[in-house]
Length: 309
Image (cartoon, rainbow, N blue to C red; front, side, top):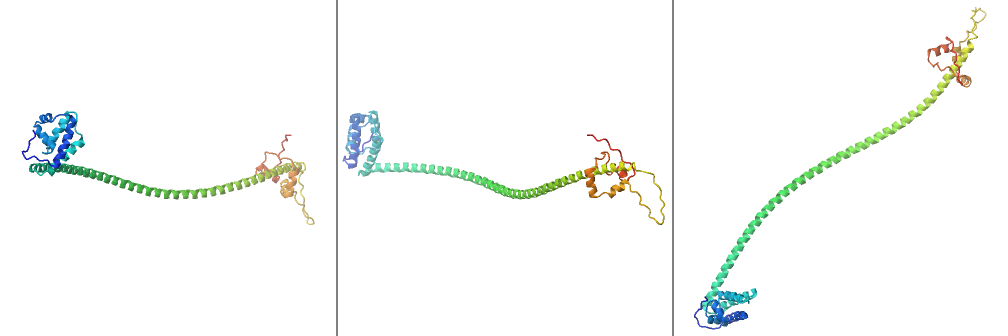
């Protein structure tokens, strides 16, 4: 029930504005003041004095009015409820009546207490949030410190690897230079060996030509030896001893076929033999025992084999 303060009625400007605003909102629902007063419950004259501004309706009356209007299908909007509460506080602050001033101070104290509680809660929330943020910041700093230590280790490893790679690079370049020098030296040796091989091939070709020439000369000499041996065989007669006299000189001893061959071993004689002599017996070889006997005239020359045409 709304209590009425028994003081002399008088319309104050702030209370009049506040009452007119409440009456305007009440008239939208189409109900009578008696019905509204019965729902409070209070007298209809109290409702009339609140609407006329003779009294400043308390906050409980304003809340009851908002509930009644909501039941009748004409609820107050949020902006309207806030405006009515502001008008109520303004009317209490502007009123000269002691009980209105006391009510204003009580509400102001309550608001201050609420604000204090809200601020304290906000401060506690901020402190808790700050503590959480400090903890999170501390954890983040610890994680960053660990990451920094890992990065420092990775950097040290990278620097060590770089130093090792530089040393390996220097060693590799040195080995490459040595290999290049060795390859160049081996190329020079191969070129010298190739030149020496060509010279040897050339000399071998010349030696083969000389050997072939000598072989032909030997064959010619063999044929000549055989021819001389055949010519000397029928002309052999017993030797007659000749006694030299003081007045005459002894005749020179007859030359053997081997001595004749040695005497005629000039270059001109060999060319003549090459042009005119037949092929020798292939079984004889220069430097053999039979060859020496034939050349010295101590053995008969073998008969030549019949030549195959």
